[in-house]
Image (cartoon, rainbow, N blue to C red):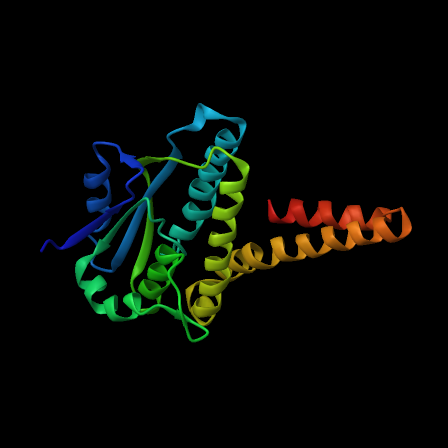
Length: 219
C-alpha cells in the first residue's frame, strides 16, 4: 500500500541506509525507478568472483553512472531496485504478459520493466552510495549460463526500446549500439579468425588488429 516498492533478490544483502538513499532519489515524481550499486558478497571465493565484482563495479560506476546523467538507466538491476507504485500499476498488465515474437518470456524481467518505465515517460536513475551485496556464480559454467540469459534479455529489450533512443540522447544511442554491436562483431571476428586458422594454418595480422581495435573501442 506504500508509494514506493523495493525489490531485493533473496541472495542479496542491502546496507542499512539503502532504503533512505533510494527514497531520496524517488522524491522527484518524474523518477519511476532507481537502482543501487551492486557488489559481489562472495568476492573472495575465487578468481571468477573477483572478476565479476570488478565487472559489476564497471557496469555500475561507468555505464549506469553515465546513463543516469540523462535519466535513462537502461536496466535497473533486480537485486536492488526501487519503483514508484503508481508507475508499476500503470505498467502491470504489460509487465505480467511479457511476450517476445508471440511467445511468453520470463527472463530479463528487470530490464524489461526498466524499458517499460522509459517508454511510459518516467526517468530511471542510479544511486551509487546505495550499496547492495549479492551472491555471484563461483564456477564458470553457471556464470556462462547467466551471461547467456542476460544477453538474450539485452538483445530482446534493445529491439523493444530502439525507438526511444533518438528522444533520449545521442550518447545513449551510441552506448546501446556499442553494447549490442561490439560483442556481436567481436564474436564474428573471433569465429572467422578460428575458421581461417583451421583452413590455412595462419591468421592475417589485420584480423588480430581488428579484434584488438574493437575490444579497445568497446572498453
